[in-house]
Image 1 (tube, rainbow, N blue to C red):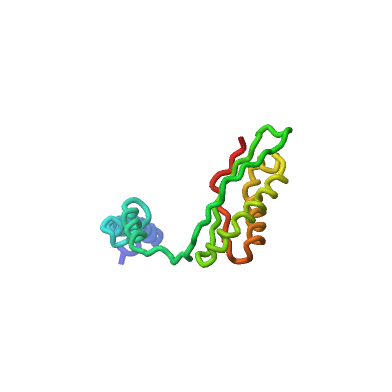
Image 2 (image 1 turned 120 degrees about the vertical axis):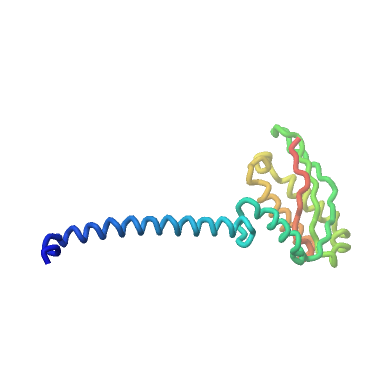
Length: 171
């Protein structure tokens, strides 16, 4: 009994904390290494595909295997090149534009018959523009939308899907 009287209860608690702290740290390190190694093996062996590193080849194979989405049938009607003089005060003397119309294949023949009217509408619209209207960086989108709307009025609604400008040069 004398032996138990000499032991201080605070020493027992401190010894338990020290031993438990080191044991928890060691268990944590071992778990970290095992889980890290397992994750590395899963990615390296290909069980888990990540878009980092070697997954690019796998992604290319998947893209090649998928068929392209169903695109609606399309036909293109080329327009003659349009050359517009910009006037005396302009730095550039001429505006040169060529374009194609994206149409429904069903209406391709009708739109080709209306090409002279389409060219007339485009010439009239482009002649009304000033050089500053054409030089603005955002002008192309605005001009394209205006020309497409005029073309759709001439050809009839639903026949022309889009206007594709293939050349637009100030000379």
